Amino acid sequence: MDANLMKNRELQVERTIKALAKNNIEGRFLASAKDVVPAVKQLLKDGETVSVGGSITLSETGVLDLLRSGTYEFLDRYAPNLENKQVEEVLHKSFFADTYFASANAVTEHGELYCVDGTSNRVAALLYGPKQVILVVSWDKIVPDLVSAILRVKHIAAPSNARRLDIGSYCTQSGTCIRQTVDDRNLMVLPAGACEHTVCSNYVVFSRQQQKGRMKVLIVGESLGY
Image (cartoon, rainbow, N blue to C red; front, side, top):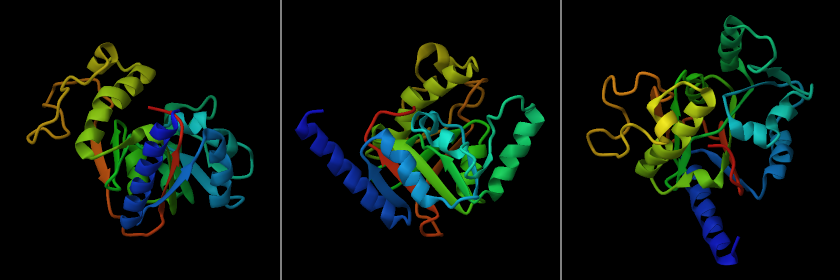
């Protein structure tokens, strides 16, 4: 990347981390994906109970492999041969994990995290339950404000996730949300009945946290995830 563009990115990350701190969220910048696992190891204790929300980023950065190493008690929703009922049990047990890993759909320069879920086990665990929450996000997910975060989900995150999960939504075929724009009356939600098959059921904004330091955000200087 050109040095001047790199400087712009670094300044954006710096602004975002400062804003996160004002919301009692710890932010840290990691230059590349290979730096994620060493950083995560510093935040965990051997034998901790850990779990994850669905995330391509966690796979791309090696976090899933680390959690499966045997050093931690991993509540693995992806373990082979699990039946649907067993997966549900893992998701429920995740609320009692020592540390929960996920990514976010967007991070604003105002220090907010924006997540849109279908099943919503991810946002539920981020909101309450696990003692520590660690989100690994690409710096591509940093946006100026919430409107930009919403548009990012509509045009990038949701279509990509829907296609990965093969749910047959409108955005799977079109590459964008059925409601492509944002206005004051329809900031986040879709018109009732507009999208029968969707990964966008609940829209959550994480702002100032009551428990300082519970939520940590590792911002990675690479393109990762959706």
